[in-house]
Amino acid sequence: MRLLLVNPALPESFWSFRWALERVLGGKRSLNPPLGLATLAALCPPHWKVEIADENAGPLPLRPQVDLVGIGGMGVQSARQKQLLRYYREAGYRVVAGGSYASLCPEEYLDVADHVVAGESEYIWPQFCKDLEEKNFQKLYRETGNVKLEDSPVPRFDLLKLERYATATIQLSRGCPFNCDFCDIIVMFGRRPRYKSPAQIGRELDSLRSLGARKVFFVDDNFIGNKARAKETLRFLAGYQARHGRRLRFGTEASLNLADDAELLALFRAAGFEWAFLGIETPDPAALREAAKTQNCTGDMLAAVRRIHAAGIDILAGFIVGFDRDTPASFELQRRFILDAGIMVAMVGLLTALPKTPLYERLKREGRLVATSASSARAAWSRARRTATTRARAPTSCRRT
Image (tube, rainbow, N blue to C red; front, side, top):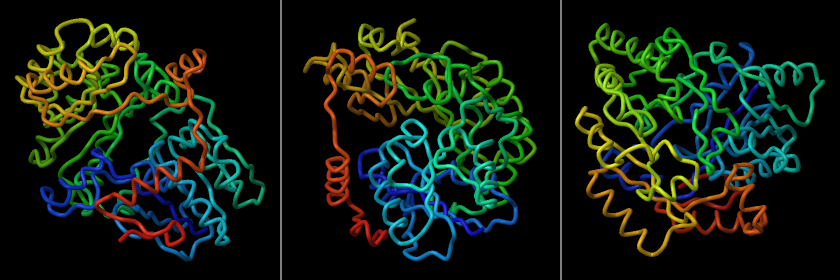
């Protein structure tokens, strides 16, 4: 069986970091490689021939010599993902949809894909592969149980062109203990974080080092969701770094309560973590409480940021505008906090009601959602692409120039 796994292009935005990639980071094509597809490739039967194509890092093949095309994607990629599913299906290929947005809303993909694989893939993807070989397949495969991360394989990093990316990626945990109403992580992965063992992480880092990687981003939505497990991993990483000449540089995502644990901060530095992305969202504690992000309301947020800086860790942070309590004055409040806190990179986005999140359900009850048709979503995606620094041809070409 020959399989092509595809990561669709991201619409151009601040988050694409296009200018920084081209002007500061030596002409890299994208920030991060598609770790999910590399993991999926490792779950395929060993006799399958697997390729990975990332539209953010190079052109997609128009007529690949494959039996199956699998296309993943996040919510922001969903319009392009559906275009590519239609293109390859109309060209005669069997296509399977997956990724985080297809896992959240599999019903949106049933008409554009031959198969949909929803949820964590460690168990259901091998089942799909087996069914496909036996020609006894289903339309929808959906993981409804608990996946043990001990069963997750070392991703096929060798299938990624790592030299095209600013950082390599790795995942330690899934899930988050908090209950922010706008977040889909708790919907998909639950509120009880699950972790890989330190030995698994060591094997993945060995693989990345053998391929020349030096910067590694732990993509966990909250690295410290379980502080005891996080500390265990950090102690292991400190020893790993010592054994291998401290040649790796790490970054990750964490919650603001990182600042409340002096031991945790010290372990971060000892392990070689240079930066962390924090979801600060807003300096308005009342807005945070309304969004159920109460973990940011337990103390002085500005002081917390400064404690993390004092530990030698740079901060990238996410902010949101559009909470019910926001007024025109909220913009200056956000700007002042970012400057006073010395946030290295501030990512400010509009509040978005992702399907099936608590925020979405609340706004639906209140009659405050505006339906968006698939055609208008595709049109918005096309407009964003036309104004991008790096432009794309029509969907039928599946290429970037």
